[in-house]
Length: 391
Image 1 (cartoon, rainbow, N blue to C red):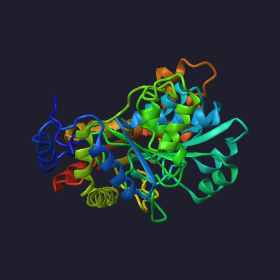
Image 2: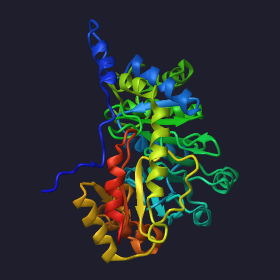
Image 3: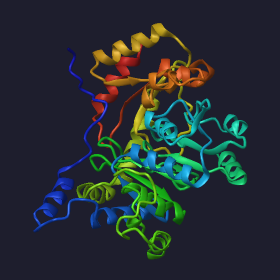
Image 4: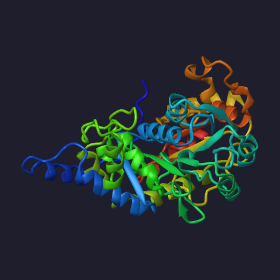
């Protein structure tokens, strides 16, 4: 079996991060569950991102779940517009919260939902637009942001793969009603596992805090919020009032410690990934591969390789060449391509058909992602050039 010399992902946790954890654990009786270190990381993250409030959770998937549950509590059920090119947890969160996912094709320049097609789908049943910023590209357009504000339709940003990417100089994750981040071990910033819900809306912040911890009222940040629920429920123990049917999605202190340590070098990591991506794109033959992506402000999570024209013979040759050169890859980009081809969606009656979304279908069949991390040896680029030359 061929040994992978260029893996899809590398662990971003350094010895410096682990030393912070060790120092903390060497204290007498250290707190290990959600506590002051998590709170410090939430505050530092909010400052770095440029939002008022952040709530850390145990994964990016949990961030998606809590955001969708909060939307249901605030606006009721209905439809949420989503792309078929995203991670499974985005669509699963929509379904599990009781919403109907309405799918829309992508813009091939940024691989996110097509703005015009999205706006054409909005109707009285629409409760939100859930946009995924794919692999570090900026999925926003001014038209989409401004029109959603005008229509009072919440924008939810999935920024799990795009920490530090910007739209017109402003970080992604600051434009919508809420934004979700993942701190999975190979992402720009990792806390081993972890995620964050970010917002400028205080009421949403309070709700997410409670939803994160079994729906308990005592988790609210403001005394006035807690007092309101206590006065409304005089027969209940004030420490055990459950405002929402929720689960435990709290992080732990080790997550917070590693997050604080990693945040110090996040900007440098984003810059390195961006430079790597530009070098990668310069190696591609624009006659064979798509190269005209919206590159400005990107924070590339993984290199993007998409054939310009459908060709199964060339596809198979590329995959053979990449494997022979020890370069790990995944076909279909984020989430393995068109989610509408996955069993969990195909069993839902009346769901859209995969073939209705030609751009996503093209990526599904003729697109790949390849690992990008802050530190890349020059040998990789020469190995990659060999793999895609002479096609």
